[in-house]
Structure formats: C-alpha cells, structure tokens
Amino acid sequence: MTTFRLSPDDILAKASGRLDDHAFWYGFAGSHTVGYMDSFSGWQGLVSLLMRQHGDCTTAVLTNGQAGERVLSAVAGKLKQCQTDYDRADDDIAVRFDGLFANLGQDAQYRAGGSLGTPGPQVSFPPDAPHLRRATPMEGIPEGVLHLITLGGDFISPSFYLLGLVELLIGLDPIDWVAKAVVGDYRVISEVGDAILALSEFTAQQADLMATDAGIMFNCWQGEAASAATPYFRELLAMIGAQSGPLASMGELYIQFAWSAFLLAEALVSALCTLLDAVLMLGIDAIALALGISTGPGEVGVAGVLALWNTVVTIHGNTVAVCFGLVGLIAGATGAFETVSLANFKEA
Image (cartoon, rainbow, N blue to C red; front, side):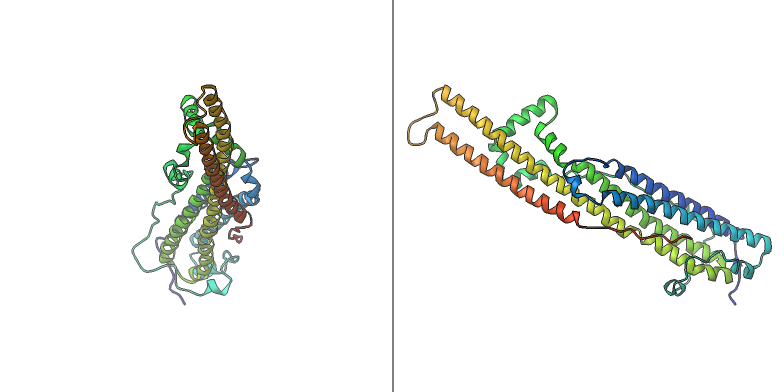
C-alpha cells in the first residue's frame, strides 16, 4: 500500500485555486486571439478568396479556448472536492474510490509512467503566469532590398519619381493603396498569424507551468488517491502540451498568406506603374516634339532615346510584375489547400 501523505493539508485547495487561474488564462488567451482573427472577417481583398479555411480556423481557436477553460475549471472543481473529502473523512481510501477521476487517464499510455511528483521542499505554487505577447505585423521586404531584387529598375521609371512627389505631398502612395485594397493588406493578415503564433507560445509556457504545478502537488499529495489520480493528470498535461504545435502551424499558414498578399500587391503595383510609365512617356514625347527636340544629330536622336527608354521601362516593369505575381500566386494557392486541425480536448 502506498504511504499516505497530504502536507500541507490544504495543498489540494491551493492546487484547485491554481488550476482555476490556468483555466482563466487559457480562456482569455483564446478569446484574445479570436479578436485578432475577427478583424480579418469579411471581404479583405482577393487573397481572402484563397483563405478558405479562415472561418474554420477562427471557430477552432474559439472552441478550443472554451473547451480548455471548461476542462481546467472542471479539474479544479474535482481537486476542491477531494480537499473537502479529506477534510471531512481524512480517509485516503474513501477519496480514492469517490469516482472523481474517471474521465481521463484510462488509456494504457497514461496509466504507465513515472511519478509526477519528486521528493523535495516545494510546498507552494509559484506565482508565475504564462505570458501572452502582443502580435506584431510583418514589414515585408524593405524598400532598399526591393531595389536590389529589381536591379534598381525603379530609378529609371518616371512614375517612381511622380509617385514619390505625390506621397510627399499627401502622405500616401495612391498606387500602393489601390494594390492593397484590391489584393489584401499583408500587415493585417500577418498580424493575425503572429497572434496565433503568440497563442502557441503561450500554451507551450502554460504546459510547462502546469507540469511544474503537478510535480509540486503530487510531491505533497501521495497515497492511494494520488496514485489513482496520476494517470488522469498525465493525460491532462498531454492535452495542454498538444495544443502548441498545431497552433504554430496555423499561425505559419497565415504568415504564408501574408507573403502571398505582399508579393501579389507588389506585382500589381509594378503593372500599374508600367501603365503609368507608358502614359508619362507619351507626355514626354509630346513635350519633346513641341520643343522641336524630338530629333537630333546622328541616327539616334531624342526620339530614339525616348523609345529605348520606354522599351526598357516596359520590359522591366512587366518582368517584375510577372515574377512577383507568380511567386505570390504559388504561395497563396499552396496555402489554400493546407488544413490545420487543433488537438481536441476530452471532457474532464
């Protein structure tokens, strides 16, 4: 027979309060993340057509948060009942057969394994709480790097200087604004993805804290009832620990869609700027003609230079648009066929 130990004698009441805290933290983190996800509901540009799983992901995170909070609250209630039984009868055998720990820990994988408690001086729970960090949108590719990728082609584009002047005057690049409105704002999408990644980190921290808490509880609580409850808590800890990986995969999927939106927007910007360049080049040709400088000495006059300039700008703009558009479309299309399922909670 296992030696009975309950020291301090209110350790289960303390463990129950600690689990109530975990239940609140888990539910709050889930609902907080859903708030980010709801901000992306409805029409959010063409890329939202590829994000067919967004509604299911939002529902899954919401349901998962509610289920986790419900399970942890239920387990806290069971521990509180255990404490009440000990206070009333001081009978370890009676507590063991009270039927409180019945729904979890029945599988062989949880019934085998080492103790969750080890001999030591810990008799109280640390005040630590898992940290839910603020979500941060991605910045995309820095403008300087974009210039390198596109071989500095913007610097020969007349629309680049015109739009720079417009942005200086009104604080907005109209072409960039139109592209984001049509394709989707990659910053909003990436912020949702990072919020889900933050939730993944949060659940990993919470799983570690709960493992520490379980070790403290079972170090202070030993006997027939504790042995009967150990497989139950093994499965509970496994369920919490199993949440982080799928959540990380879901967050990365949103980041992939964000890159799709960024690249498709850059492709649209390049295409629109190429059209604007064509219009501006017509204007420059007209000005040269009006000033009588459309021809010059030699075989290549001003008109020839302008025609060559126009050709280079057009080829460069179309090439950039096609390359960015192709990569962005591949990223979005492959993401559209991916599915992520969160680990299910069993009822406690």
